[in-house]
Image (cartoon, rainbow, N blue to C red):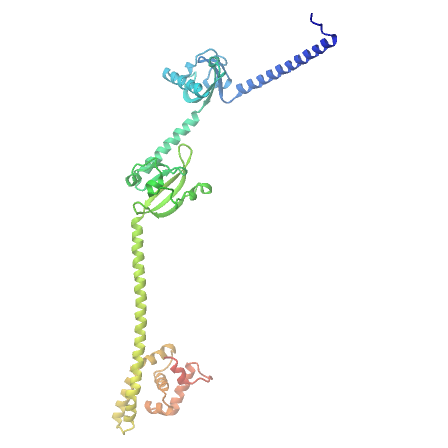
Length: 421
């Protein structure tokens, strides 16, 4: 026979039961509090939430009722068919959403619901089983109104189509490429005429016939810290050998990804004109150099010719003139000799011209005196040659030194005149 528990054991058991009861009560209170908080979250959530069993509304939060315009709790037990514009859409959503739940535990799709007043709005449905082990217990479905997002997407798509239509109307080649995969996403009409409709292939292969990305790719100039900047550059295409002025910029594609946009303007004709102009410029520069050489040589030849003329006159003519002048000439013969000397002086005028051009203000007689001083004539010889007195020649020499800046300087007049050569 089993031994009866002692009083102490019974007392201990009672305490344990009290403790268990207390713990259970605390747990129930915590569960109730948690349930209360969860309901508050569910009811106040900005996302519509409902429990659907056999495609009938078993429960829904306030957001669902507000979204579809029905009175609170009026949808309980109602089939969800009332939310769809037609049977076809109702059946499509049922199949795709529940197939997704069955396959991955969560289904998601876009559809359109009808409010109580008959207006239609776009929404996103997401669903999962309340108990994955027993789908018959129902599915938790969330509903998000995506009408504004769809409108924005449609507007963006419309603008995108307009942009592409504008690009197709341009004569310059335009392409869009993924900066990471280098995949061509778009080619306008002009670009397709050049490279063909090669969308989906890599830009470096189609545009440049390269097996790897181009080393001169400008992506670093328009992505990263340069997002929003436009990059201009020129290059010669390695396939068709034409020159292009490229305008590159990062743009946001409809899938929200940033892509590479490039407008390529054919500047081959301009480049050829520039090259032809450069060739002509180079040729003219070469001709100019040759002409300078010829002109320098001509000046040198003229100088040598002048020096030879002066030398020949001094050595071959002047000695005989001096002898003739001392041979007892008549007055008329002396006049002829003077004329001859005057003409010879004109022949050797490069020196006279140089003096008069550098020192304005010399009289013709001062120039003739300067020429004879340079030739080494004495004052007496100069006086005889010019039919002047020696004092007059000294006066001319004095004026020459003043006008040539030699006054009060110990510089020989003839030496100074010889420096003009």
